[in-house]
Image (cartoon, rainbow, N blue to C red; front, side):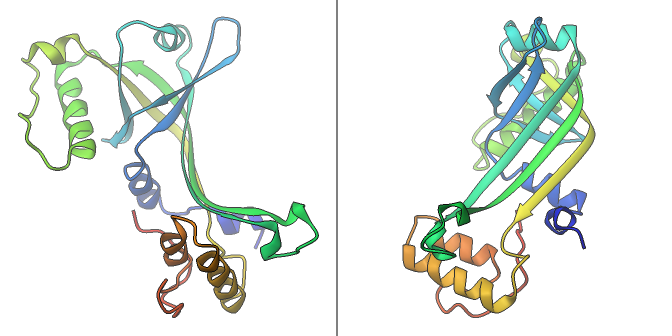
Length: 210
């Protein structure tokens, strides 16, 4: 198995679940001089597309009107692994555990009021899970005047690196070093690596469940 293939997220459902577990992503459009413009955005994946709420005017809006081809990226930094975990004399040994998704697609500005309302409701469901709001409908003035960017994916690829390239025992050793180092994310990272963070008991192969 090639190394790149080993790190690939093969399930579309997992990619979508991961996207909707991440609070912000980066939209990449092309400006009038051919340079990429990268903007962090709140977003939701719904109905086979990525939706974003936006100001009505701005460079990214101009870029999309001129060139619909865009990129979108979302990632989760899981854990930095210091070089001394692997070799106390080689700083190049440092590594990182992560999960990431990259999308290439076509962007448009949503005009259909029903689609706009559905997109806004999906955004609210993602970011305000506790409720306490009235669902939006196509007849509301706010829906009529807000700008919604839609990205229809052409390709959507995901990668994760959680120690699946290592043997179980070596992964347990690295997990123990992570706990010993005691970062704020240590226990979550060890769980993603497949171990109980309290006992280091093996639970499953490295995986993530959004």
